Length: 191
Ligand code: 5GP
Image (cartoon, rainbow, N blue to C red; front, side, top):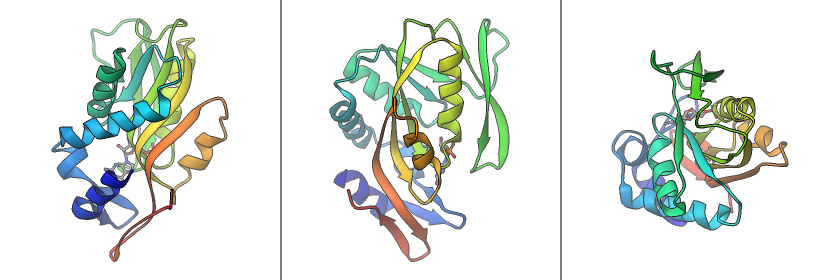
């Protein structure tokens, strides 16, 4: 996605350890016009699949997922990173965070993940695939189906892309794939 690549080159910052900071348009301040283009591109890539709901994980997946839910006119469920005291009937899994170097619990109410649902998972980054696998586990626990996974940015030098693409029943799409992050700059895979 050309517009997204240009924005990453203009405003993204790469850090040691292969971290890309996109705080000024995705992760802290949000550019809704860019996120709208991102959501429209997801519609183009996934529009033919029969999703009943979108699922994402708090916090940075919520904006693109909501924009996409608006365009597809389907509900958006966001997985929580801490269990609220009021949540009953909870499905729980765990995720190792690469950026924070710790394992945390994720949860979602079984009221919103049911055997009648077919999900599209949306997230900001795909790195090692741990968040995606945690959400896939929650969807499976709820008896629902996961038909697609869409990421705004995939870091193709990490193992998540290869790992997830082994699950051939799930359509995986990344809008840009970053192959190298260094002090000299950011390099993308050719599409
Ligand atoms: P994974 O679970 O695939 O290893 O990592 C994906 C999650 O970690 C994403 O939800 C994202 O929040 C975070 N993440 C991974 N790599 C990066 C990165 O380079 N930059 C930012 N901002 N977040 C990242």
